[in-house]
Image (cartoon, rainbow, N blue to C red):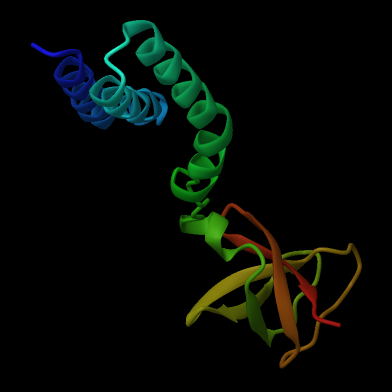
Length: 144
């Protein structure tokens, strides 16, 4: 087997193994091996091939990998359930105070609500923002 073919096989195997790891390290090493395969086909000098592999792999790991990770591996935070309601806007249906007897309409549902600020009374028809969910009660603040 020629050295170029060995580097080519190593590059393909490393890039295929990247599917399992998912951290982009093996992909960078695989591309480095492909560059070394090109070097082996051109020069035939094993020392130069190893140096080309090391330089290409290190460059990809330090330069390309961080940018690719930011671009492709960033997982957005998706809030679900009651966490998704925090920050939403609703309308007061019956007067809301700090005692928790009021009602608001939030995302098409009626919720029991209490005001965020102690002693504050929010009148029906007022637009509010959900500050937190406490049990089955929305803690709200009037919109400015």
